[in-house]
Image 1 (cartoon, rainbow, N blue to C red):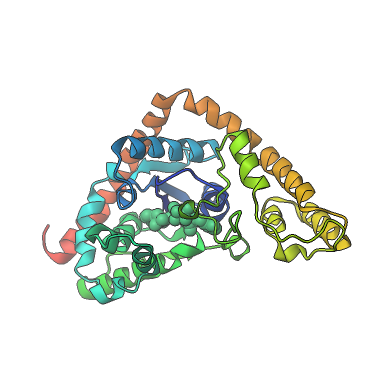
Image 2 (cartoon, rainbow, N blue to C red; image 1 turned 90 degrees about the horizontal axis):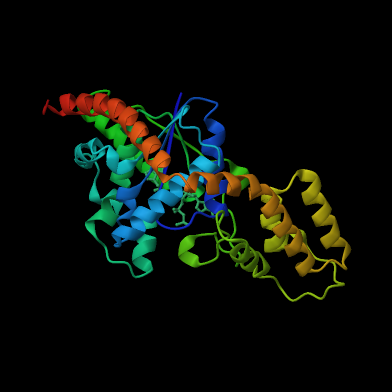
Length: 320
Ligand code: ADP
Ligand code: TRP
């Protein structure tokens, strides 16, 4: 089984990225042949600052490696180091109607937030389909917000296969329901675009500020509180053992347990969970050359597979 996923280097990675996608990628390394890449072509739809893009790309690499991504097991690379993906994007774009792309939520959402409708933003799902199909992927671990992009990928692969003969495997999304959407500190979906994140590689002061700033109602300390309707518990539950979660829920229901105390407990658990990660990340950050070598070796392995699929697709359409 081949497992593939990508993440954009478009900002600091947060708990939503970790629980929604990165954790699954690291765990799935044991289950099959894994390909993980840093989607820097995609990030160009939001970042127009070369130095920032380079920095973010290194940050994502450090985060993934420190979280336990093993470059021996996993092919880990930068999207742009496999330019074959651009040619495949073109071949796929010939089967995808504009009307289908116009329905993409993430595209519509970006326009609704005032972003300009560039061609890159519009064709984003076709490049994503090429990322996935180029490696004949079976399983794609992503957060819930990427489900529609996976449907578009499956649609494109099916249409291409019908028109030109069997060329691509039809991939499946892998979205564990338990962590479908991680809430942010304000209760909306945690997202770097909403400024409501808890960054996994943030400084102790930044993490404390984010956690202590979680929005709650103003129920008095003595009042019994419904754990399921507060953000602290919702986030805590995602990191805690079932026993720890039950303990906090019981405390809330009993009354006399304040939000401040719960936030401190969440901060403690967050720091405990990510302490080994921070240590490994600091060690890796001291050796950027090693990280670059890992990405270069990954790109070389990825390109071999990419070439095979691209040649097959070229032959299918008649430009070999
Ligand atoms: P952001 O919304 O912060 O810009 P991205 O869109 O770059 O994050 O998402 C990267 C990956 O992390 C995707 O697979 C996405 O589905 C997942 N992800 C992002 N935010 C969350 C969240 N709040 N809950 C679950 N998964 C998330
Ligand atoms: N669109 C994804 C996101 O924003 C990133 C991505 C690009 C991706 N290509 C991919 C994810 C291929 C999985 C497979 O998170």
